[in-house]
Image (cartoon, rainbow, N blue to C red; front, side, top):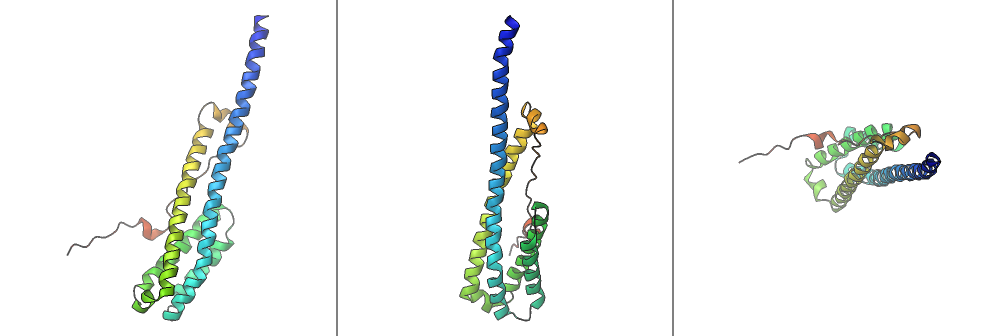
Length: 185
C-alpha cells in the first residue's frame, strides 16, 4: 500500500517536471530564434544601404568598377542566401566588400568630404554596430540554450525531443580579425 502512495506522489511530480522542463527548453529555443530575427532585420537594413553607397562612390570614383561590382555582387549573394549556413559566408563576403569601399574612399578626399557619403557611412557604421549587438544577443541566447539541452537531467528530454544545439556566430570580416598596427612617430 505504501508503494502505491509513493507511486501516486512521484508520478505527478515527474509529469510536472517533464512539462516544466519541456516548456523551458521551448522558451529558450524561441529566444534564440528571436535573436536570429534581430540579426536578420539589421542585415536587411545593411542590404538597403549598399545601393545608395555604391551610387555615391560611383559618382566620385566611377573608374573603380571592380570594387563596386564586387560590392554589388556580394549584396546580391547575401540577399539570395537562405538558411544560416549560407547567410553567414555571404554576409562575410559583403562585409569584406564594404571594407574595400571604405579603403577606396581614403584615396578620394572629395568623396570623403561629400555629405551624402559621410551620412551613408555613418548609417552603415551604426548598422554594423547593431548587427554586432544582435550577434552578441544571439550568442548569449545560443549559449544559454546549449547549456540547457546539454545539462543533466534536461538532456534526457532534449535528446528525445530533437532539441539540437545552436552554433555561435563568429567574427566574419577579415579586416576586423587583423591586429591593428600602431605607428609611433
